[in-house]
Amino acid sequence: MELVELYTLIEFCKNKRTYIQTHNIPDPDAIGSAFGLQQLFRQLGIETTLCYDGNMDKLSAAKMLKAFNIIMFSKNELAGILNDNDCIICVDSQPFGGNITDLTGIEIATIDHHPIVENTLNTDFVFKDIRITGSCCSIIAEYYTLLEKEPDTATATALLHGIKMDTLNFTRGVTDLDIKMYRFLNRLADNSILMQLDTNTLAFSDLKSYSSAISNIQVFGTLGISHIPFPCPDSMVAIVADFILSLIEIDVAVIYNDRAEGVKFSVRSERPDIDAGKLVTEALFGLGRGGGHATMAGGFVPAEVFASLGSYKGNAINERFINAMKTVQQ
Image (cartoon, rainbow, N blue to C red):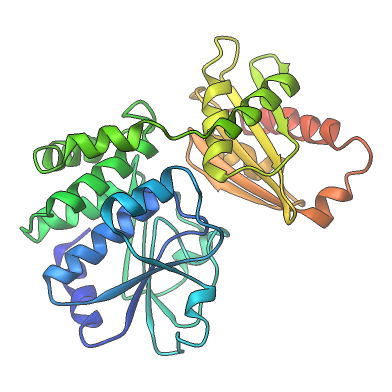
């Protein structure tokens, strides 16, 4: 990423109403990225508004908002406020990535650490920075170093927390940039706040999700698939997927969770020859959408489509992922 491109975005946003939008149901990496970019722009004299769509997760996301006094507005709260000329910067997401709502306004920029999607390639943005890293917060942190700016304690802590969460404490998908930005942020962050955010992230009721996943797990070779038949937060589905992956017999984990609007999938892979993003995309082809990184990915199938799988939906899902494992194996 060239510094001149970043300056182009900064100049473009001056004297314009600018919104920083995360992917739907933002997680700590998305929140940290949006907050970090907002605070950087503030240092440069540009005020922005953070926004998202979907229900805010009650676990780690809510704790993060409270810890750093982050204000984010939902799509519903912005109804009638956004106009066609407003500028929107998408962070930890791409406008055509399938996990972000198209709000009123013009998407002028996309900053993401997920694989680039075809429509993003074919769209001219004022600014586009998409590269594979463990965390989008690492990309935002690098902007501070490039502009020779220093984040305040709250911002540094939020960015560092986002990096830790998305890399599973530097054990998943870590790149040189993540390590470099950890060193940059660590001396500025408040470790006591980081510790508070790392603990007490589960409610007693969340144990039900673990219990269900354990009871329903099916193992096919080293592929573990489990079903949680009642709604739970996205972060809880991801936590359970990581938990299933920790089993010595499992190196690819698939968790799917029923919601009123459809079924949420969370996929994890420790196998270098199985890309989690490609796996879920292949398995859900024709049913819904999916994608992500080589080690972690997600997907969604609308309720009406999932219902069309018939009386033995679990068997159909198992078969799709088993066949997809063979197809995507490198």
